[in-house]
Length: 95
Figure (cartoon, rainbow, N blue to C red):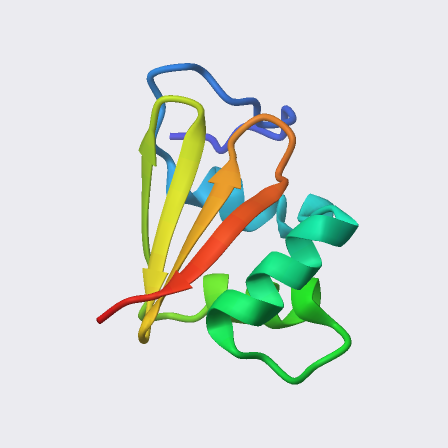
């Protein structure tokens, strides 16, 4: 079987975590999102998106897709990422 070199796109019924992982460079959030994530996770970093990116690509991260969002659970954190724009919507500590 030959591997395709075509760009990968998101189909509405796809849950291919490799798609999210291959597009992590597009991961971003808004200024309000940065503050919300920093507060919810009690982060003390200026690079919130970079911190989230490193967590999402961790080998123990569990990635699923429901509707228009990706849900990533890793360590004690849960991230919600829009599947079309790669915007980090929010992140929470899991208890």
